[in-house]
Length: 359
Image (cartoon, rainbow, N blue to C red; front, side):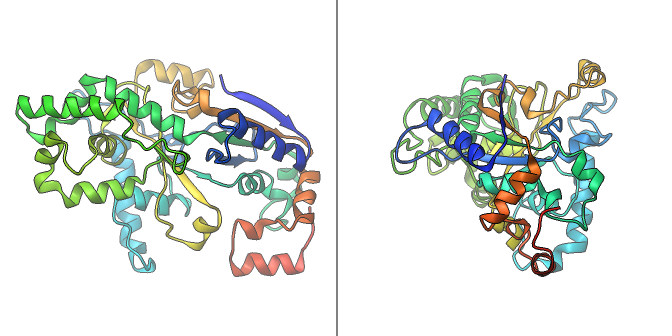
């Protein structure tokens, strides 16, 4: 079960975050933690697409792993690309890159956005006290803010370990490669070897970013080498074999029949000044096959898709509950922080000039 901590001042908040980092690693190279602010402590860590009516339910009549949840993502992505392609100076190169852009413009996706900055997440959680136009007094009274804290490296390490030890999953993911048995066995050996030796640097210089992947870059690499991918994977050449499996699960949308694998923690190319300003990073959810017992859990108010319910993530999650949010908002403003940190855009800067106060 994840740990909850209550704070009632900015100083206490910073001390708690530093304490989490110290528990993980007390070196001069502190670990990277990710943060997500919410104005409601009861709001689960679930992406917006998974809150819709569409579910990943298999239809036995067509014997397909393509579900109505896959379609719900596809149709949104197709229309978003069609109507916004001309507005981007740099074209996203993959589906997950498009999902990141869509997520930041209020389209339902299976991506959950986080920040590498604890202060940005705190600002998000108490944003209503900085913006009188967007929020009203009722929303401020009902605000029960919190900040979620995640250790992305350890979550992804557990994902890699799970793939290493699950030969059935490896076998299913390699079906589209059309490999001979000998070649498949070579890839499985590479998976074991890569997973057990110190392939990931784990050195003092880069240990903080080990296991935190750029899924879009991985997809580009796989597409570039598609014609010789089977040989490269079998021979252990050039391509990290885990990249192929991660791409199949988290980008292609391979349907998982269990909810064991956690969302993948990824960095992505910045496609806007807003995402850059917010130090945006993301968790990409896989497609979990819907089971009858899942609906029963939802009826009891438990969402099986939530990160806090996942066995891989809940040991690397913390929740900081924010008391006295109005006072903390004032403390932030006194230290030069406000919603211009979240939205570096002209209307927000104009508002700061005219309304430099807490509501």
